[in-house]
Structures are given as C-alpha cells and as structure tokens.
Image (tube, rainbow, N blue to C red; front, side, top):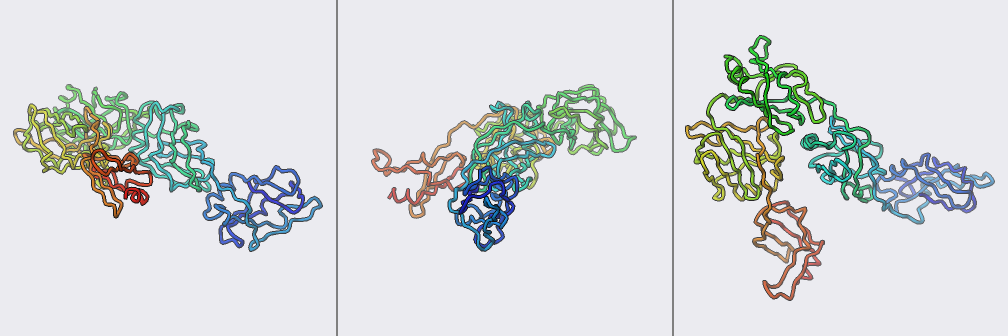
Length: 558
C-alpha cells in the first residue's frame, strides 16, 4: 500500500496511477517502475489517498534490487495529471530529480505462499506458482518432497534438482527433477500416478522471497492431472545363458507383472533373414524398476540352444520388441523397437562363478556373497568391487559410487561353506560409502563386480556385474543402527577450533553443537561451558568434525 498525503482534498476517482513512478533516489539511476492498472484506490475523496498496488507491481518491485527495500531507497515521482482537486486543479508534479522520499517505510515481513503446482513427468518438470516474487538462489531442493496425500502416507524426498525462472518477474519457477528422482517417484506405487495421489510437501526454508522471508511448511494437491504419457523403451540388455536370463534395462520404471513374453523375439542379427525365435513364456521375480530380469523357460532355453547362429555369442544375440511387451507404472505400453538391439553383455553356457545374490549389512559393515558354485577365497581382488547408488552411474559421477580400496588389515574374507563369502569393509571404505550417502537403504545399494574380482576353484573368472547393464541390488539389507562414539578430541583456543574424532562418519546437518559441554576436568567438575548456536560445525560429513567456537564462547571458557 502506498499512502499519499496532499495539501488539500483531492478527487479519488481522478487518480491516474500510470503517472506514478517508484524510484530509488531523488534522481533515478535506472531502477524505476511506473505503476500500472489495476493498481488503484478505493478511498473516498480527501487529503489522504491509499493506493493498493497490484500483484504485478508488487512482484516487479520485489524483483528489482536496491529499490524499496528501505527508507533510503524509496522515492516517488508524479506527473501533473496524476490526480486533481475538487475544482479540477492538477496536482503539482514531482518529476525525476525532485522525487519525494517516503516518510514512513514498512518492510516486507510476509512469508511467501505456494498457490499451486503442476507436474509433467515426461519433461521431468514440477512447476511452482507462488503468491509473490521468490529468490531462486535460496531454493533448497531436498526440502521438497513428493507426497501421496495430505498426510504423506507414501512420500519421497527429492535428492537432486535444479530450478529455472519461468514466469514474469520470478513468482513462478520450474523444478527440473534429476532422472534418479523421477525414476524413484515413478517406481513408488500409488504416488504421483493420478490427480488424487499427487501432493507436494514444502518444508520451512525451502525457498525465500526477495526480502529473505521463508516459505512456510505447506502440503498442496496438484492442479490438473500429472502428465506421464511417453512409452517405456528398452535401452540395453544382457544375456546369461548359464542361468537362462535376460537382464532388460528400460529408460523408465516398468511393471514385470505386465510382461507379454510372446512379443519378444530373439534374433541372430539385424538382417531379416537371421535366425530367430519367439519366446513362448517366461517368468520374472523382479520388483518394479528400471531393470527387469526375465527368466527364460526351460523349454525355450533348450530350443534356443538348438540354433547354431542364435545366442551363441554376443555378435549373434539381438532382441526385438513388438508393441506392448511391458507397461510402465501408469500403464503406458512399451514401444516396439524399430530395429533389433544387440546385447551389451553376453555370457555363454559355462560354469563360470555367478553371484546369485548378496546381503548388505551396513551395521556390521560387510557383504555376504552367495555364488552358484565354490569360489577361491584367496583370489578376491577388493579393488574390483564397486558399491553405487543406482544401477547406472556415469563414469564421471564419483559422488554416487565407491570402489573398494583393499589391502587394509580390517578388510578380510571369511569362508563359510565355499559358496558363501563374507567381504568385510575396511573402516576407510565404510566411511567413504557413508560420506557419499551410498547404500542408505536397499534401493540405493547396487553392486558392480569386475571380471577379475575372483575365480572359482578351476580358475574360471566370475561373471561381472556391469554398471548400467546388470548391476545388482541386495537380497537383504540391514540398516546401520550402531551409534557413533567420540574417541578423542583436540581443542585450539587461539583459533577457536574444536576437532572431534568419531568411530564412524557422522551427519553434519544433524550435528547439534549446543549438546557439547566443555569441562575443566574429567570428574567432579565445577567449571564448564555449554556451546551455543553461535558455534558451528564447519566440516563436511565424515568421522572427523571441526567445530568453530564462537568468540563469545572462547571468552567464557577462558
């Protein structure tokens, strides 16, 4: 609201807001804004006129910087036809160079509110509409979560996203979701598949307006229907003729219960005259996801092996999809392949050791590996084992995967019955896995094994688990429930640095400095000081945490 004080009664209906310009000084320095209708007044005639600024004008002013943020940069200039008195006399103009400084200034303390949002999972977009201009640089994307209802019965917290201003003067913007986030949302059943189960949760501090006011915690239903109409596509596959499986990788999560096996054709090459075989059936115990393992029936497997130039090596292992082989999470059928797709990985019918399954225990810090045959425990190469957050992690992405280092005394193999092997992580590897937030649950735990990782008792190398092809999730997952232990600490009062050494990686975001109390002795202490919020943890996640003690705290301790 702008309130004008005139020397006499003026005619409210004669107000022409387009003659009113807001600027940042007596003489404007490029930061100006001329008001536009429907900004106007509902006042009666009188010497005081209050102008209610439109949403457009408010957003425009908030979008500009260093104007109307304080009394010092709040000025107004008016033209001669801005308003008239009761006898038709025009107001005395205050042109640029003679602008009027505001007498009383009340800063913006109102929290922004999310008005509505739309979802387009085909484009990986969530578009947010706020009631005022927001500052995109303040967005904290992990504070946004997908909800299935107002109570968050099913929910998923966004891990990675980027924002882009879409609307005029930044009162709406688009969240571009990372593909792993989109895939996790899609694979979660009964969430973001219909209008009724598409809700968005925004935590306090998720984004702020131009005056640093934080959005309040909100839960909103979607406006319109969430869009997801593209068909899933097969992007790669691996063949294992030893156990008769096809590992199929799609560009989005699919439902194995929708398989139509008879529309899958195995082909010996790209040419139409190549040998081919159409599956008659199959099975899959895979969960919904990007990767589906198809178990070929015994009858089909024997029929395939009868061909001389079909699925005997990688160069003659192709697959062709008809329409509707499988459906995505909202029922969109897969698209037919335009041409036959060659296997990215092929394993012949040999007795090479195969990892059938494994259990991951983050509490004890080890892998329990189960093979289909006896393996040589002494042949394990630790550096050939990789844990990663997704089934497909790019070579350049070092934050979502960790290759074991090996060679440490804590890392050893324990033989159980020759088929079951326990691989114990070194303390360094375990801390690195936790720092990178890999294997925080079963869905973020994927194992990759190089082909030189181990051999069987006859020297045959293990069948590798390849990134993006046949990386494997654990059968069972055990969460880390062991509390971290403070083992020792150092303190430097000159620099105000407290260094704490823990038994394992700790989460800096959850680090509460006010729970730290410094004593003058181990027992029977009468002098102590409890840190305040002025002291802060300055290090990243890890087993070593640095706390910068506030100057006030250092003076108190002395």
